[in-house]
Length: 391
Image 1 (cartoon, helix red, strand yellow):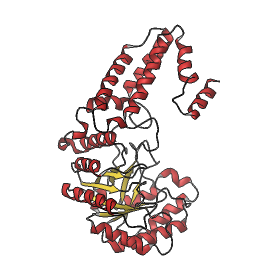
Image 2 (tube, helix red, strand yellow):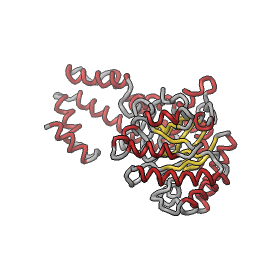
Image 3 (cartoon, helix red, strand yellow):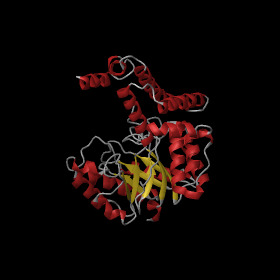
């Protein structure tokens, strides 16, 4: 089972537009530097032919784009795993899924993935049995290693309905040689770990971690630029689900490759030329989902102290504002840069609010006015929440 537990790479599994082929190839180049078995799992949720329209054949342009990516992966020594999410599958769909697995093999894929995550049906023993039967057909027909994402794919879902019984049945019926995808104790866990039901097959080398740490498809005002440190579980494969945006996905994948590859770290990709210093600064504000880095906590503390003491805009905030402004100019000249400008602008706007407040005769009241009383650029629900907090 070395194929699964040695996997290291990317799962293109986010909600949002799939990567354009040129960007995917740039990322595949970075993945090729990873240790173990460099891998790419192609499973973009909003690709209609992956999920909603999975029963249909890909039209010409989409098929050509996919084959180009698979060929690029093979040329770089990256194992391509083609995914299919049999949305609302029904009795009689098994031959069709078997055909999809055969098609994946035909275009040069090294593995096939069947994904039952985020479905509308409740997780029950009966659902697990139906999914396992479908998996058996896919595994028998494609001639490829098969990895499956169960409907219960993290620890917190075990407590929902029949989650625990579902997962036990899914694992019991999992065809021999198949592996499962697992996101940890939660969809985005603080610490990557396995539940007891998953530990057993992990010992057989049949678990691949799907890490959502840096996925930002669910956020409006944040992206994540941190490093996936200490996320690889011994004996398990590891795939990172990154941002669907061009610059953040390149940057965080390059950082992951540098972290895991040691002396074999890849060169800075051309798409990041001249941006790494600014992105490192932006990552201080946009680290991982649970907060900012210590430097920004210190910055917030200095702003709070200035508010209490009436000492004006602190030097640390002045430096951050100046550096962010300089980075904004470079972003405007870089491919994909405009995509992350709103996030940088959000920070500089908030710092400008602090600057105006601290320069006023009544800093506390001015900060409240600027943050609560006039937020035409923010979400109405955020305004309502802020006002209720104020009262």
